[in-house]
Picture 1 (cartoon, rainbow over the protein chains, first blue to last red):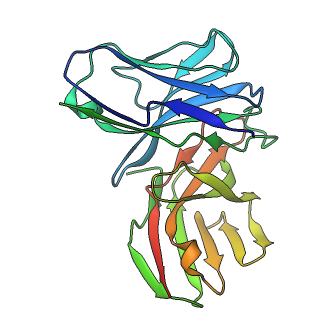
Picture 2: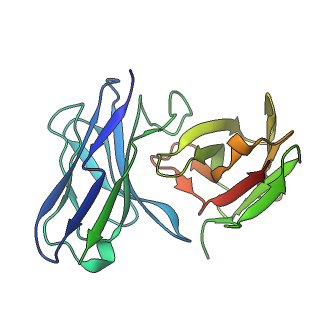
Length: 117
Length: 111
């Protein structure tokens, strides 16, 4: 089954304790992206990756890191989490993303609810 | 001002009603317009996709884009309780590398 898998689904942590949220897709997609979803603000892009070893900042990258060493994986790293990073996080992938509307359907994971105390 | 504005609702309608969901936007570079549906505790899934201005119909769903007014709509005919979800509009500029999402409208369809 084609899917984007995120882990964990729920995570409670404390301020300053490094954490990683994993994301994996099995569709051989070039493009992957991380979003956070907050009430009233919708989905905001954190980082995206056009392909392996190519990453770039989205709209809200502060406090986050990413890496794309393999095509299928795109982990999100919070080096020193803070309470304002409490949010619902989504990983998404697309076959490609060049702003030409070809195969740019985004497939989303089921989300990771993060609480930073 | 946000690039994409969407009324968060909630919108509550009886089963069988016609539902109209809307978004406005400010960036005239947007060329590709999408509607995603998000059920509770799930990730969004693409529902409708439209390029530039015009209408697109898929079963009970119709998407409309009016670029002159910077206004997009999603109509749901004969709404069902299973349509209860949050609907997010989204748009991408031609040649752009990211999609901008609206805040989402929560829809409740009562049986």
